[in-house]
Image 1 (cartoon, one colour):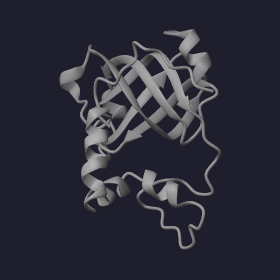
Image 2 (cartoon, rainbow, N blue to C red; image 1 turned 45 degrees about the vertical axis):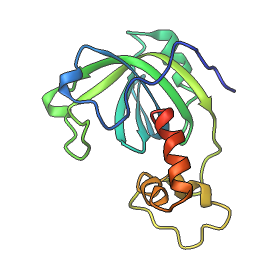
Image 3 (cartoon, rainbow, N blue to C red; image 1 turned 90 degrees about the vertical axis):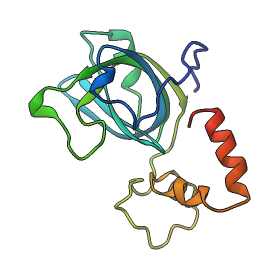
Length: 166
């Protein structure tokens, strides 16, 4: 299940990358929000509590990493190494803070797999009866911030999250 590489320690969070990082190598970690396969090139929206970054797995650039990415599904926890590149002007996504860039993957570590959730874990989805799915609602991007406001657990949780740059 886990394929952890010691040299893949997170360098940035998913909400901080912009055009000033173009050309730099970064390591990101988070949950797979969405996975799309467009003619062999795999696109993943990687999310953490800070935001979302698009990660690209291109078979022409790194066939080994691309092959590993075929098994990734929504809500997997992964760590990705890659180079930040500016998106073409017609591909910019103004809906996310990192919408002007994407990370072309050169390394992948699957930290944890996940069963397909009964609903998409997104801000705009409301679940009336989530018995047995409370953990999923905590993984929603808006939820950790709410949870972190509830002392005294918040202080301990925040310290641990900060230590891991999560």
